[in-house]
Length: 279
Length: 274
Image (cartoon, rainbow over all chains, first blue to last red):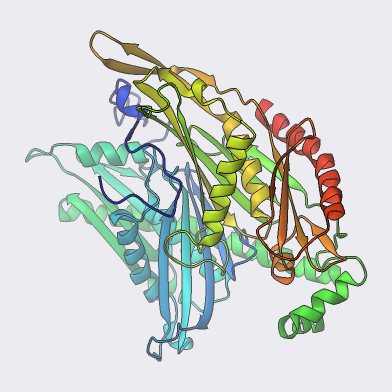
């Protein structure tokens, strides 16, 4: 059963989620009228909400909602490196993604699992390309993400939230980094998949003919005509489809980029107004 | 940086003391006034019950997941309720990466004590089939922004989320030993009590503060939490060490807390009904 966590209040040794006891019905990806089960067409992204300055204790913070996926990011730093580690002429980036236990349909154990560790690592690598590391020698920047709800496109949402929070923290970056996620199922491209769609695709037994897979990209749209800072792909997709998917992803990122810039500019204007009111 | 910010960075103690001498706090509140509270329920679709609570800047989210478990032999007709508080480094620079620290463990234990001493929930209500199936409610409280007074916020979030939980009907087939769940028919759980906590910080023998922020807690020398039920009776007192106080000060705390109970419960009730 594994060691029992001695630092938390424990429930019974074994408990099963009640969703296993209910009759599962397979939802089809595309209904007859060409719409997905939540009313979108295959290439429509979900509604987005973003705001900055949600965590008063952090230097920079952001909150992002993509459909039902809710992610909160806090950035601390640049600050001195922990004692004992070597001085480095470029900055160290520490990134940690924590998923709340209630964020998935099956309760997640509070101990970090492989998915969280993998996402933390991928995000750290991506953010190291975004931040101008040479500007902060002998320092470290901590980026913490809390996933409040996971409804698909999680890594993409995390990248966008982290990018926003880092800009809000006044840390030098090459550009705002935006994430987008895509899914292929039976050869059709779906933009911004939900958790249910990702699971269906992941569990499908693939025979030789059909194509299916997932793609997550993190893109800096304006720097040097567009740079990819993160690309994670899984499944079985032909190279042409992959290129077509990348173009769709870049387009989605452009749209989110304009919204992110507007959020940051609105925030700066509001704080300038507040400062001029008080002084 | 303004001169006030410079003073605050280099000499936080004298900066803070200068406010207290005028019976005020840096955020403009009086010593015994509370911050505004916002409650929203049903915010998380993956959770069976959820609430988001803001006490000033302190933001706390409680999500309840219900799972089915076998009751223990000692209590064959009781379900389980498992509260846990998670303080991630995201919410404040005081917390580090890793397993739960002291503050998280203390708050989790506090919630567990309040639930059992106030008899908030009758655990036999959570039993589905005697000695075979029972509900286990995992209540996870996650702090998004830590600005002091975690105990109050966590308890309000837990109470609001418990009132938001809808458990699906479970039917048990004895012959085949099979259980099945119907998510179309859901029932809320009945709470027997609605405790409300009020936290105070003791700064010195003569100065006490209500509803402390993170700065108040760092500057102060000990916290006292009193938990009252709706009829005004005292359910839990929590004073983990810290500065000594006279009993009449504790009485003042209880009186101030009484005024708060009704306001908080009406606020939660209003949100649930919407």
